[in-house]
Structures are given as C-alpha cells and as structure tokens.
Length: 162
Image: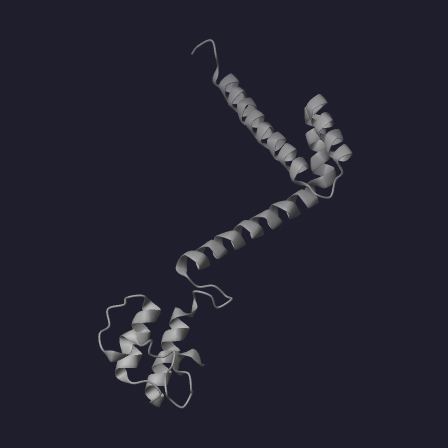
C-alpha cells in the first residue's frame, strides 16, 4: 500500500464511478433510441452509429438534443406500467370498472334491498345469495328452483331487476 498513495486510490475510485455512470447513460441512450416512436429508422441508425463510433460525443449530443423527449418517454412508460399494475390489481381483486365480476357486492346489495322490500322471501334470498357467492350450500324449496330469477314480487323478475 505504500506504493499506491491515498490520492491515487481516490482518483481510481472516481474514475471507476464515472465509468459505471457513463455505461449506465450509454445503455439508457441506446434503449431510448429504440423506444422512440417519433424517429425514423434512418434517424435511429444514425444515432446508434454516432453513439458507437464517437461514444462520449454521441451520448452527450443525444442528451442535449433529445433529453427532454427522453424524459417524457420515461414518464409515459412509468404511467403505462402504473396503469397495468392497477388493472392487474383490479382483475385479481375482482373489481372491474365495467361492472363485470365486481358486481358481487352490488348484487348482494340489490338482493338485500329486494328482501327488505318484501320481493324476496328468506329462502329465496338465501338461495340467491348462495348462488352469487358460489357457495351452493343452501337447502330448501327455493334453492333448486332458481329463486330470484323468476320471483313473483312487485319487480316481476326478482333479483334480475335493479
């Protein structure tokens, strides 16, 4: 360690850090060139050749010329990824905005309203609730007859109306 003074160690670490930083920026620029939809194929090829032939100058020029749009593409990609994650969570939780499988809660609330208004009996309500929840454990006369689908309440069709 006596042949390698502390200042030389500092400079070596600084050079290594800057080299890693430059490699990161180089790969960022190359990936942004391919991700950019507003450039023609010829323009993309030109930027890639410039970055490969004159790497420091090419990366510096790219950041100067297209840095703002590069940041905008990063932002759009992050928003798209965020929306995909939210959609995945909605699908996994069973809550879609279109009212598909998310309507379990709505269907149960509608059944409770129909029961409270007297359109459904207790047996019909339990059978319809079991059918919505997928348990299928209800017993009684209304369970096999599809209670709620052909009810005789004031709504005319039981649970099928809202």
